[in-house]
Image 1: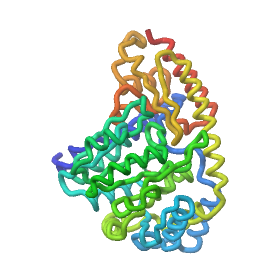
Image 2: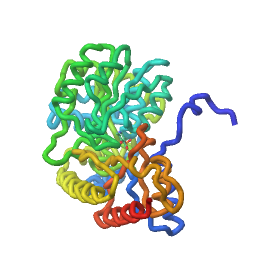
Image 3: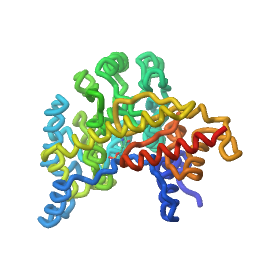
Image 4: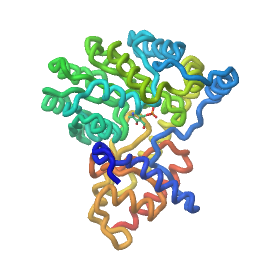
Length: 397
Ligand code: PLP
C-alpha cells in the first residue's frame, strides 16, 4: 500500500516492540521477568484516582480549553515557581496528552524542513523519530561512558553552529545520568554563543534522583535562556500515571500559543477528568512520590551489586531515573547455546528467548554495546532477573 513518504522515515518504537514481544510470551504462559519497561510498577496514588472519580461524578466530562483547565495550568505554574525557581505564569503553560506530545508540539512549532536538532546519544528514541516527522534532521552528539554518558561542552560546541535546537534530558532515559549545575552551566555557556538554538529541556524524571543528588534545570540556572527554551514535564513518571496521558510544557508565550493552536487542531485537549485529578497530584501530599523514590534507590543498588558479579559486564552508577545502562560488549563474540552473540539487539532477543528476561538493546537508543535495564520491578522480580542473567552469563563461552 502506498502511504505518505514520512511514514518511511520512521521506525516503530523499539522499546514498545520489546514490551509487545514480552507480553506475547507472557500470554503464552511464559514467566517473563520484565526489565524492559519504562514506567513505574507502582499504582497511581489513591487520592489522585479518587479525584478523577469525583471529577467524573461532577460531570467534568466535556471538552476543556485546548491549553488545559485554568486550575491545572495555575497548579503547574505554582509548582514550577515553588520547586524549580521558574517564574512561569499560568499563561506560559500548556497541558498536553503526555510529555511525548509536548515534545512533538514544540518541534512542530519550532522546526522548518532541514533544520538540525541536536540529540545527545544515547537518546530517547521518540526524539529522533519526532524530529524526522517534522522534516528536520536529527544530529547525534556522542557521549562517553567515562563521562557518565553526559554531553560535554566541547562536543556541543563542535556541532551547535546553525542548529535549531538541543534536546537535553536529565535525569536521563536510558542512562540514568543526572547533570550537575556545573555541567549544565558549561553547556549554557556554549548555547549563549548560538542565539538561534533553542533548548528543549525534558525534565520528566525530575524527582528520581539518588545519593543526595539534586535535580537542576538549565532554565533556572540561566534565566536569559528562557526566551528560547521549552520545559517538558509530565505526570507519567512522578505520579505513576503513564496510562492517563498527561504532560505539560512551559515556555515563551508566542511558542506556547503556537503549541496550543496545533493542539487545538490535533488532540483538542488532554482528558478533562484526568486534568482535574492532576491538580490533586500536584497539590496533594507528595509522600507517595518520596516513598517511590526511596524504593527505587534501593532497587538500583540491588541491581548494581548483582550486575557487578557478571564477568565482563561493566556498569556506571547513575544518579537518577529508573534505568541502568550496562556495557555488555564483553559478551559479543562469545557463544550462548552454540550460537555467537552478535550485538545488543541479538543479546536482548537471546535473553528473552533463553532465560525469559526482557531488556532493551542499546541500539534502540542509538548506542551499540549496552542494554537498558529498568528497575521498575519488585525486589523479588529483580532478584529473579539477576538470577536469570547470571544463568545466561554462566552458559556463554
Ligand atoms: N521523555 C522521556 C525522556 C521519556 O522517557 C518519556 C517516557 O518514556 C517521555 C518523555 C514521555 O512521557 P509521557 O508521554 O508518558 O508523558
